[in-house]
Length: 299
Image (tube, rainbow, N blue to C red; front, side):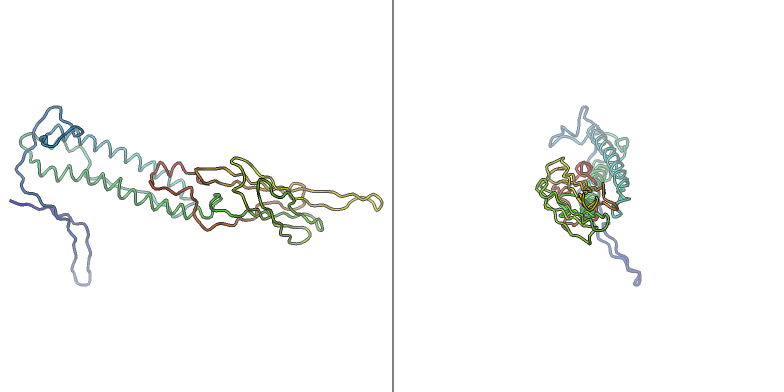
């Protein structure tokens, strides 16, 4: 006699009409008469077509399912710890939760030559396999890919080489000293001065991709004034500094930028950055995984 198992996969409630719409997964099978057998030494990893469904085979599979569940739970815990550490800077990240209900030690429920193979195959073995697949290959991957997209969006505002087209420094000193960056073309950099008045300047630096890996480019900002008596005049020079270090990471890079006023009277700092508007290529991958994400450099 034919049998059917019906699993509800979607429920839509219509409160105004008092009706509900159900979507059902229809699984058909032919009989519930076959019994689980005993076959000493049987193991699911070496089972071949035509071998009996034995208690020993089920036990070996059940042990492997439980072991995989434990590995998943460790993975999910480590993943959530990583996400929680990053949430203070990236508010759109979400942790992942999954509650297993079918993956447990069900092997004691099988008795050789008396337990229905078809029924337990559907209610225990298949349900456990379904949970393991959904947990690791569907729901976790959905969460992981969503978080990677959130991190890529966040990276647009960070100092990755692929996201940053310009670094701007600001320097200010005494009146009529006319500061400016005169160390041009350091490691292939392009440096442009935008004076605000006779005591301040914004230094725009581009071409950071030309800085060698692990190297710090130094941009010198000089200002000067005349000192001494009418008959013994001399020029006094003051210097501030702007630093950009480039570190290569897996086809991308990140920039470490800082500045100091040095001898200048008032200010020397990194003022701002101009971004490319794209996400960091550092997070591009065709095979997303937590191990890959965990290896990425979060600035």
